[in-house]
Amino acid sequence: MKDNARYYWYLADGGTYDGFWTVAQEITRMEGDYGVFCDTDPAGGTTVARGYVLPIPTLIWPSQFVFAHF
Image (cartoon, rainbow, N blue to C red):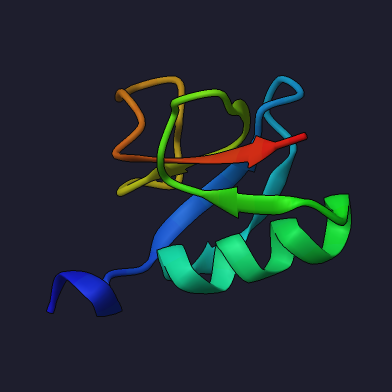
């Protein structure tokens, strides 16, 4: 079930809404946008997107992060 969970994704640029996707879908989208390997491992990566369980990110902490490895 966790793999099918969808999150409200916002870009790390300060809050641009990016869609309601699963983690795998957002990683695929970020890899296409940035042209680099992306995943959920923060080691050596730069945050490019944050996923929230509610559509109002200012009220809660992110539940998921996507990192780009440049």
